[in-house]
Amino acid sequence: MTIHQLSIFIENRSGTLIKVLNALKEANIQIIASTIADTAEYGIYRLICSSPMRACEELKAANVAVALSDVFAIEIDDKPGRAADAVKSFSEAGISITYMYSFLLRGKGILIFRTDNNELAKQVIARDGLKSVSEEDLAALA
Image 1 (tube, rainbow, N blue to C red):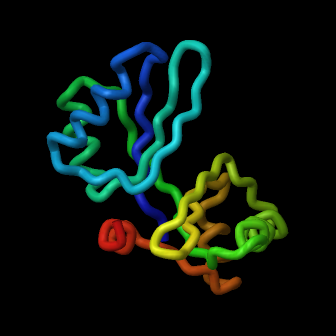
Image 2 (image 1 turned 180 degrees about the vertical axis):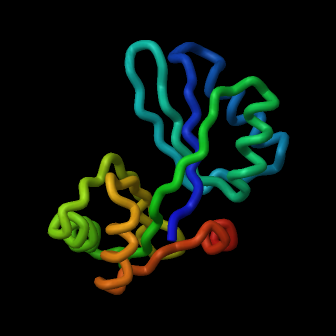
Image 3 (image 1 turned 90 degrees about the vertical axis):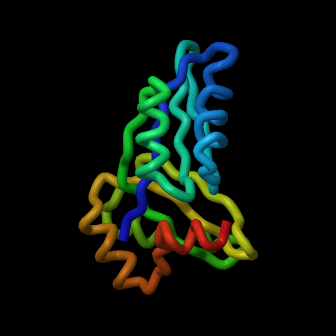
């Protein structure tokens, strides 16, 4: 099972991030997790939120460059080494993780990641008994 992530392209200058955050605030959309990867000129603000489809529409209406992508969210125990154990399952199956970020939510670790092979990743999740987290689960916990 995959979830929707927003990838927002923002210039590296004052005021661009607040435009995005204010648009989400005005639409009453809760940010659950986010990360920014940047270069000298622009950044990619990736986020998981309570209503990704509506957030995408609101941001496009505010003239923000945004795209929806499918990523995986899995729940792990909040104990040292659990992220390594989960990633090892994908690595051993020959799946590359193109990026990943994580956060704690109500005592559980949540790994958000994108792979180079979604179908095989789904098989690994099922085979290894990893717990997928749905968008509804995340929104309910936030």
